[in-house]
Amino acid sequence: MRMSRMGACVLALVIAACGGQTFNPEPLAPSETQGTLQLPLTSTGPEGTIYKLVGATFEITGPESVSLTDTSPDTLNVPLSVGAYSVTIGGDYHLERTSAPGTVVPAELISDTTLTFDVAKDTPTQVRFLFKLVGSGSADVGFSVENGGFIRGTLHFTESSVPPPNGVTVLSELVGKDIPFTIAFSQATVSKEAWKALRVQTGPITLQFGGPDSAALTRYVAPTFAGQTLSFNLRPEADGYVSFSGIQLQSQPDFYFHFRIEPSRRFLAPLDSEGYPLPGTFQFVTQEFPGSVRIQGPPTFGEVSGWLLNGKGSTN
Image (cartoon, helix red, strand yellow):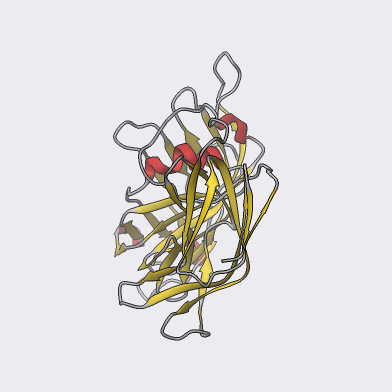
């Protein structure tokens, strides 16, 4: 594994953190000890096929800066000082089956190219870039390959709730920023409901925020929704148009956070012979006014709202 280190600089890094949840908005302590970033690059799919991420480069920035250019190992283990980081995927990355090296497996990166994560003392932290395999399931560099779908887009935040007396909340700092997000699910049940609606009930979801400004959302918000399920509808409108019902997530069991996307504008989508929307990939946007998307937390976190840009979903 070729690995180059540079002087300290602060940017945002990509991970899917695991473990317990801490709702303390205080900054992390200065880097004094060491943990490990793990990047597993292979995964066994449900059908027994082993997939490998090939040709990727990873730029890690934070208390330390590291460049990774060798993806030949099955897992990259990177010792890092404790602190907040970001990682950006680049290069000519693609997936291959280990049984057919050199043959590209069609897949789409559904994560943002930059993700944030924290490194803790003596603890391995896994980074996960999510991929959608064309025509079948999903994969993540973390790493798994399953059948499922996703909802993704960019959250554009324009307003915050009235802050407490000190004038600042964690979420209010997102106003004026664009934050990519991805909700991925490994399984879904699709059924036809009344009023010609196509209903999608997912299995457990993974929520991921991306971009260099997503550290607080990655650290505090995303873990509270891990493993929850989600339901949404695609409903036909007049003249061949369809609308997306939006989503509502509420963390359990203590209701720390709410994440809501309101129903979308109408968009063109294919219908079956009975007039139901066909399962597959769809693109959507919300109305452009504050409240079309909203993330709300406890008082010290506050609330932020705006609208959704470049929405895209897949039912399977």
